[in-house]
Each structure stands twice: as C-alpha cells, then as structure tokens.
Image (cartoon, rainbow, N blue to C red):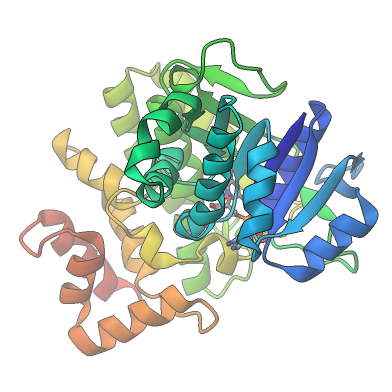
Length: 380
Ligand SMILES: NC(=O)c1ccc[n+]([C@@H]2O[C@H](COP(=O)([O-])OP(=O)(O)OC[C@H]3O[C@@H](n4cnc5c(N)ncnc54)[C@H](O)[C@@H]3O)[C@@H](O)[C@H]2O)c1
Ligand SMILES: O=P(O)(O)OC[C@@H](O)[C@@H](O)[C@H](O)[C@H](O)CO
C-alpha cells in the first residue's frame, strides 16, 4: 500500500508519516524542501523521539520522497497512491491542488480506483477546502467521475511537534500524546481503516473541541508569553498571570462547547486540565514564535479566537480572556513572520480599529470589537 503525504515537516514526519508507516504503508513524502527530500530518498528512514523522561525512540521505515515542485512527478505519485494525506498548512493547500488534480485525471483514465484525500491541518473543513481547490482545476466533464471515486473526509489532528533543532534534518521530537480523528461519513463504503486513526460519524464536535481548546489555549499562551518576554510556551505557561488567562480563555470556549455539543461539563473540565498539562511538558521546548505564527490566520473569522468568542456572545458569555488573547495577537511583532509584519503595518497605517475589523470581520459596532480595543490599550 502506498500513501502520498504532502509536507515532510514537523507533523508530517512526527505524526502522520509515523502512523502510516506503522500501519504498513510505504510513505512517499512530497515536499518543496530539497534537503528533506534528498535525505528521505537517500536514507529511507528517520527517527522519532518522544518527549518523555526516557526519550523513547522509534525508527520510521519504508519512507521516501518526491520533489513537490515537479507537478508531473506529484501527479504520477497521486495516480498510484492508495491514500493521500497533507500537513502543509491550510494556506498552502491551493499550491498542492494542481498535482492532486492531475493525479486524479490520470486515475480516472486508468479505471478510477477509490481514493481518500485527508487534509491534516488545523482548520475547520480542511479537506473540504482542498477539495474545492482541486475541483476548480478539474475539467467540468470530469467532475461527476471524480466525485464518485475521490473522497475528501475532514479530519482533526492533535500532537504538539515544535520546531526541531538537531544536526540530523529528519530527526523529530514529538510529545507522547496523539489523536487523529477522521469523518467516516465522508468516506467510501468498506474503506481500509488505518490503525491508530479514530473514525467518527460527525467530526464537528471533535474538530471544534480540539481547535478551540488546544489551539485557542496555545495561541493565548504564545501571544501573552511573547508580550511578557518569554521565548517558549513552557516558560510562559508557568507564569501565574498567563496561566490564569489561558485557563480563563478555555473556560470561555469550554462553556460554548458544552452548550453547542452537549458535552458533559466535568468531562470537559478534565479535557481542559489534560491540555494544560501538555503545554507544561518540561521535556518539550516549543517557541512562542511557532505557536503564534501566522496571526492573520489565527485572527480570521473561522479560527481559534474569533469564532468561539462570537459564539460566546450568542450564549450570553462575555469572552474577556479571548478578547485579551486577540489584543495580544495584535501586538505580536515578529519580523520573520510575514503575517505579523502585515498586521503591524496595517495597524500603523490604518489604526487598530480598521485593521482589526478587516482581518476578523468583527464590525466596529460589535461589543467584542470594543472589548478587544480596550484590552489592547490596557496591555503595556
Ligand atoms: N506542529 C504541530 O504541533 C502541529 C500539530 C497539529 C497540526 N499541525 C498542522 O500541520 C500543518 C503543518 O504544520 P507543521 O508544524 O508540520 O509545519 P512545518 O512547517 O514543519 O511543515 C510543513 C511542510 O510543508 C512543506 N511544504 C510547503 N509547501 C509545500 C508544497 N507546495 N508541497 C509540499 N510540501 C510543502 C514545507 O517545506 C514543510 O516541510 C499545519 O497546518 C499545522 O497547523 C501542526
Ligand atoms: O499549527 P498552527 O499554527 O495552526 O498552531 C500552532 C500550534 O498551536 C499547533 O501547531 C499545535 O502544536 C498543534 O495543533 C497541536 O495539536
């Protein structure tokens, strides 16, 4: 069995590639980073280290790579694949769509075996977004046949994998915890299950619980941590004020999630505690610049701050801590992060109110807008 996985980065090697290899797939990584591609081709294996006391290691075998810049090579690999997965970043999905679309064209010519394409990105409806990019590239005459044989089930993936600093470019350290949830209702009948994947009939509660707990808490810690001068999440989260604010934000998203999905309150409180304990893991070093990366994406209407904060108002909850997280995001001034540079420039040129309304789609009249501006002024 062959799996083509787009993105041989941290989560690609540290989680998806590892699980697929364990499940018996040959994993063909497609990446645009020549160093990663060459090393994977030459060695055919790499090591994953767990961030636990023992630093347990596992060698991942039966892997190789192709040049993601070569659309013909990518298309051929997709045409021959039993499974396609991605972990490139939700904004990169449009760039991998041409290779997938061409690969689907080849598959349709060769008999149209069913294919699952699973985007493992931090976003609501990641696979659906990829499907739209791919379908837009396919000729109209192929749409029905493609829709009948290619499935794009949405997924939620959870494992903290920091930026890596090792001499070996393939070596990757990951937290022990992992969870990969896939929407079974969007898959072919009698699909081949991958061991280690949790299949559910309705992904919505899983993706929202993950994104609005793990990723909301994470980015609030990153933005407040950056503002306070901390370099890592592990340093930031032991600061009492930051820890209280992160917990406050998770209580706000938690109240929304409990109301929206009928979760048991005490079970959800345990889930929050578990997530916070993962942030503290002293065997990990996760930089606030990684966790806060792409602030415009994180401030976008469907992402981890704005969506749960707007939902909070619907339930009569004032999201003070989420608003503080958004205010701190507007102070995230990292020169190496193009979205942070764009945000700072927009705030300097247009003023916070106009820039914030544009990127979040929260109009100036909304009470959340006012709350964020107040929190921003109060942040020293
Ligand atoms: N790191 C984590 O803790 C974690 C956990 C869960 C989900 N995620 C999600 O996984 C995705 C990847 O995150 P990451 O931390 O692994 O990032 P990363 O930067 O380590 O990896 C992304 C990889 O994609 C490659 N890439 C870029 N453009 C490409 C293209 N056109 N074709 C093929 N490859 C391309 C890059 O070269 C890089 O190797 C993001 O959506 C992220 O939100 C990350
Ligand atoms: O990958 P992002 O930029 O969406 O978010 C940064 C981190 O919060 C994220 O990568 C987490 O480590 C991960 O989602 C844990 O499952």
